[in-house]
Image (cartoon, rainbow, N blue to C red; front, side, top):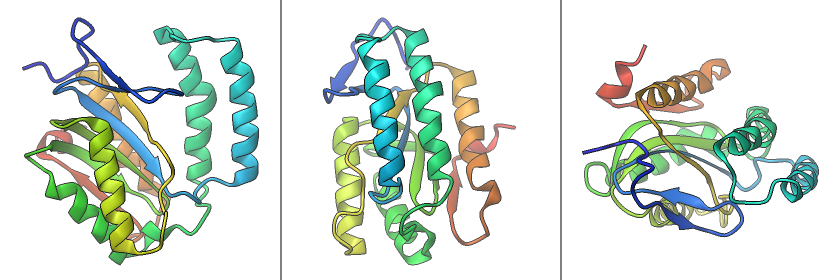
Length: 200
């Protein structure tokens, strides 16, 4: 069974602005964040710059244009997230535990997890979805929001990338593993499967 993106197979797309791609049994790298994790002033500037760029790069995007989008816009957001803005609810072990239990509840049935890290204000996941991606995300966010009991805590949407090959998988594992390097112990949770743990 192929576990990486197969360009010859059907890709299911969900969402209109930046469609989320799902392919049966293909690995996914997903990032989602707390609703207050991004300063509104920075996010407003980001959206303005992206709108101008998008007007000059109509969809569908080629792989090279998608890479330019990642480099110019996605990684900028990642850097801002690492600044630790907002309530950082997930720095609290009790709240992280709710998310850990929710993610692992579906392990081996609706999803096969490979690696994930819960940071103080965002989450990176690397997994193989056995269930439609958008339904998994809706379920995980909804369940944890109710357990934490602080109202609407999650951003709308999420960012996803299908894993292309073994090298892409290894790079994603290393990226997730490096994320909490500057954080103090006890403020994050890193989990890896045996397969991910074998990546050097």
